[in-house]
Length: 392
Image (cartoon, rainbow, N blue to C red; front, side):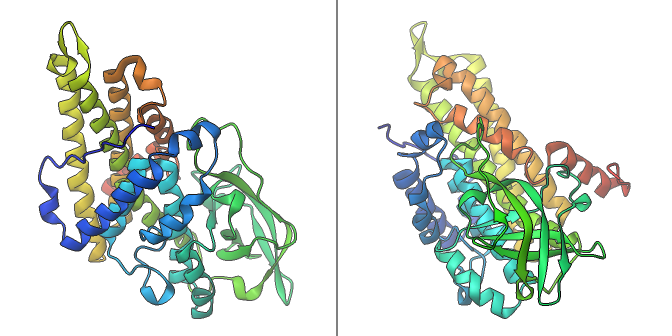
């Protein structure tokens, strides 16, 4: 079993911008990934299985509900801490970070933000501890980049709601205990509903044959006349802005997470280049390899500074959706390019499971399109700077 020798790059001494608590939280997550993720993640990906045994550890390192108040079972941390945890998890694997992102930003956050006190106390402590795993139902078979066109709907039947429709590409769906589902009422207004496993007519078929995020469980949510208790409606916000508010938090976590994947690819390529001998000397001594490595560390450093600043803005309640969108697009694109360059540094070895690079590259092919595609995020920035929406 290969030893995890990862050393995080910090070319501009960003650690000086972090508090001692930030560094303690990050280092705890980093050591957990080295101990509990790195030894098992390759086999999990090869088998296309989610390693269920990691759920307890994710809860223990604060990955579930990092910024949710402690009274509801969360860790009560700030936004930079949440980001640092996501960075370390994705350094291990994007699928592991996805599981935590969904749990925190797409399930716990809407229940905390849009739910009532009874809902918070019922669900959040169990989600924070990992006793419950959640999923988020927004994307549909025919409505991805245009979620407002959803057809999933519910009707008021007097003492309950009747939910019908389907959601697709849902992380955690196959084993989720609860789903935060977005659907239209009879007036066409979007609301969030908490749907629980075991409700009659609710099924979660698994999505098979993925070449990406293989260690993350993906599935569908099928609603066939599901009776949802009225107390399961999230009462404090409706409209498309409600699920998009959740996506802001998730995209923010992705912006940090992608840096972790990029750092792992860079660290692997740097170490390999210094050890691999060709023409009688390490390949790190050749100009083209140095060019690749220099460009990698430059782009990682730029992304680190961008995302740290975004975290401080989030802490102050000043970060805009457009700023989060820019960071998500930039950092994932950066990470994918670094994965491809790092693969070339390793030559044929770069495609093997002995190294993490090809796995990161395949994972990032999903990350660059989920929760807003690369192109849609470009158009969000375009709309923000011109005032003109190009996708409506």
